[in-house]
Length: 147
Image (cartoon, rainbow, N blue to C red; front, top):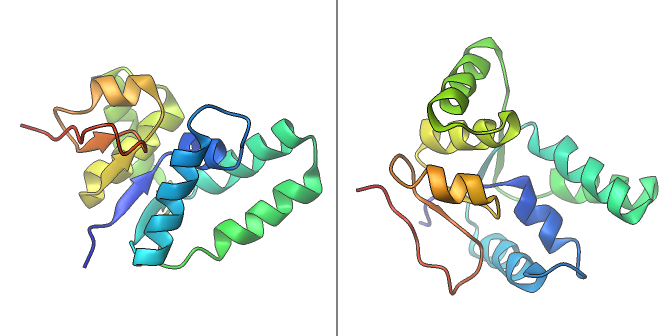
């Protein structure tokens, strides 16, 4: 069985934005994970982040709401609620690694559930390898694992 992963919203938005650099790699990775039945452990924040970004980029509520339905239909998707305790944990991750709030939420999910974090965010890629397995979606990018 494949190890579960956490995929930052940046990768989903990139996959859904064919005009962006790396879009093909992001889309192929997500498709591969779906085909292989890889479990995704995501913060609930992931849904509105992706939908809002697509609505702005496409200037279309209809397209964004279709994406919402597609995200909800991802097989083996587990959403982690941002309750008080988890918000405190994500805040500690943010402070300790100097991450933006939403980036810290994804990192906290990966840390708490032992998943690999897949992201296009430069700060996550640079600041997290000592504490969690983190990598970009490109197959050319090597996996950065904790020592």
